[in-house]
Length: 206
Length: 206
Image (tube, rainbow over all chains, first blue to last red; front, side, top):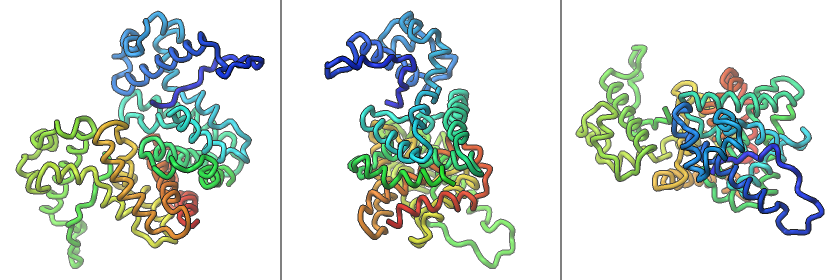
């Protein structure tokens, strides 16, 4: 499974609840359904031309009805845009002060991989080298991840430094999720953060 | 096109030749044919189960005869082993003294991408997450790239540090070859080597 975006409309959990599970069952079901629809769309988009995928095919693969997809996502184009967007993932990946961002990005990738079997950026590694689907992913990746980070960097060569910081983070995801590096997987998160974070931060600082 | 291994049996070019092309046409043809066969096998292996691929299918895709494949590679298994091996690529990637290895690895990836449209390691990013093909690639990648590098590293945590150095290099390949980072592609090789090399070297040194 690849990165699953957090629903942007999610409301905060009730803080007064003493239940070990913070979400009421109805909302958990809705989130699971939404995730299944996104997974199905992502699967089909990775294997078919955009225009050839029907809402019915997504519904069948997700095990839901087509009207339910419309209820959650509005229409097919909105669903596909959502699948190909890095907005929500970049928001979480870059959610730290600049002087702590290198460590935060490393920790965020490791925690996402460990706890959800997902990665905020790894979809770009699967982008087809030809065709619309890959090109849309590349354009989104640049605008929503790289340019967003570059906009926060002071000093010269901000765009290049942002690409190099993101390269470093991408490599960690490939090693963890695809090459399945055994030492990386066996090492405590904070130990990896201590070693790898500074090499990301180096690009952010100068 | 992915990484194309250098034929290990290649003989040196005649140094006394004043021709602008150092290879006689017959050998260039043989090398092109060999590369076409490897490309065809790589393409089919990425899309089919190992056992389902016939020598005839590889031959048809490469535009050569099946006996010619046997002449070059011995048999089908030897050809597939060659396609899934990182030996020759690791040899070139790691061919530098340890104190200059970080910069060498960065330069080698950039030059391979720029001059051949190939990358020494990027096949691992395309390894299927399930099945024999992906698993063989992962095992080879660990033994032939990561462990080989780890064996050269003094000090503690050599295996983890090797994985992190290789992660950093993998990310550069993904950014260049798949995400197609525009700044990275527009920046002179040695400028990138100056910035990115030290972050790889940091893992090799301590």
